[in-house]
Length: 369
Image (cartoon, rainbow, N blue to C red; front, top):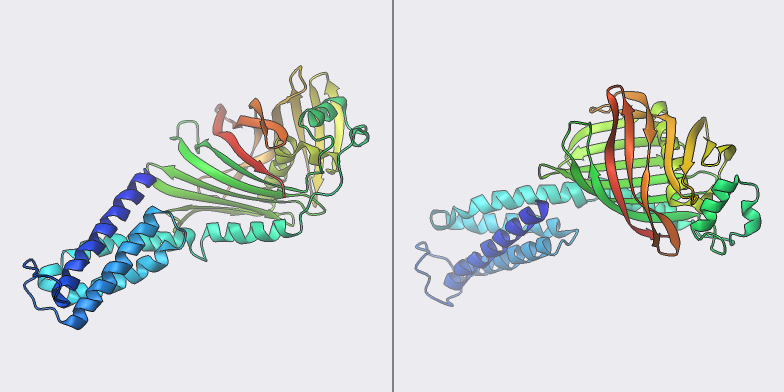
């Protein structure tokens, strides 16, 4: 939907810019332009030409998805409207396109500008990855202190002989919903995790609900977590933070360790307890929070579920967090880069009226700096 809107707006803006050439042609004496009855001087003809070039360029950059297109778009609105005012009787209808372009510019600034959630995500991930470099290689000896199920799972991930995981960058796509009867939203997501004395997790989701853009930014640094949800990059729907949110994200970062960075479990502050041939319990501590999860493995020692009672569901306004059983069943494994990881899965809440999947994801890319 948003791709269609971008193409429609972009093409309309390009056409709008090309029409400005009529004013340039009349003012500069290139041709007779009968469509414009009002006189246009050579100076104004040059102004029409400049507005045409800027407006066409803004439309092309929008179509090309250039991140900073909105800067040129703002100049296009200003220059176009100025020349339209000078020939108002002939060109006033162009104001309608400029209003559309202005709306697009505001959204472009809000979603891609220096104060946007995307810009914050880029700044934070750059800083987080700056000093995260893999050191040393995983050996069989490193696996000996772990339960056999966990050790074999890490071994199957391809960790032995590879560097210890200090950080990763992942990309996803999938769909998400806020409740069992709510509509699904498609999404793409980017995530950066770092490990060390103070693990961090940064996650940005770009979703759409009935064609309306919705963005989500999770930040978990130095043991403090926030989650912000905005519609059209402008209107805050959720702004969650506090001790319960910190605890919930502690569960999530342990979940990421188990699913996306198994090799990092070797040095993770975790106490393991074997339950039976297919289950182990992990108790993970980070800062003030200690959380527990039960991991289920199939007979091939692949992790197929992660269940914790220490995570809380966020209300629709982000003001209330309610403890609920949370699980992340995994349905498929593939090789991504030089690791074998769970690439398809879900996230479930066990709500009072029953368990339901609120997220379905596919892992598209995994990079380790």
